[in-house]
Image (cartoon, rainbow, N blue to C red; front, side, top):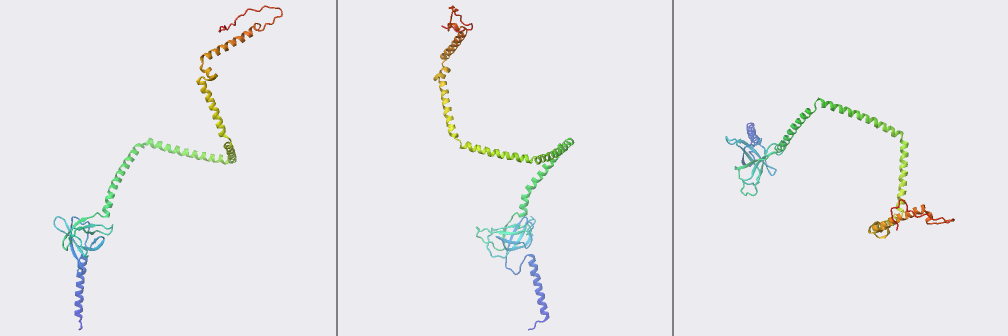
Length: 319
């Protein structure tokens, strides 16, 4: 059978019309050639959700948004979902609007409730929810930071005002003078540093000689230390300890009144007798010096001895 040109033209027109209808429906979010389920979700605010936005379950794309329209005069918005997947989810599953990224736009994520065994059928209305996106979370975090920055700016402004109040003309002049004096001090310090460097350069040989002498003294001191370490210091210390122990024993005897020194220190009677004896011996020697003939009598002519006269400063009666 031969197909005429008119039939070919009619077939092409009909195919073009069908393709146009399918493309228009596809652009509107409806796929005429696919078998899908339809669900509805109601929101107070769709957060910028648009037609053909993806619908996901556990991150897998299972459909798209086919229609968004106002439900009634209350302002509620009804969203129509086309689900192509045969994955069963319960009637109590939640359809949440969320933002997958900064430039991805809004999408709908269905969170299945696996504890509920009642399967959602096409045409029912699911429970809706809105999850904060990345932009919202960043804004929530930045809002307190912004408040702190504003408070900091206000505090800095007040601080600058107080500084300007404190820094009057006289204070500024004093501050400039102080900076000038500091500059002069630094200049003098630079000159002093140069003089010290020149002095060190001029006396470099003397300093080297001094350091050599210090090294020699250190070496000699090391030798002396070796000699001291090799000496019998332990034996000397032991002897010193014995000597100190003996002295300590003597002092203990003296404090206890034992021995001659102890009796002299503690016995008052012995001390008094010793004092009297010393005085009498002194008087005896004085009398011997003044009257030697009384004790040594040598007379060639039979001269008679003078009678005894006690010394003038005799304060002790000799019995």
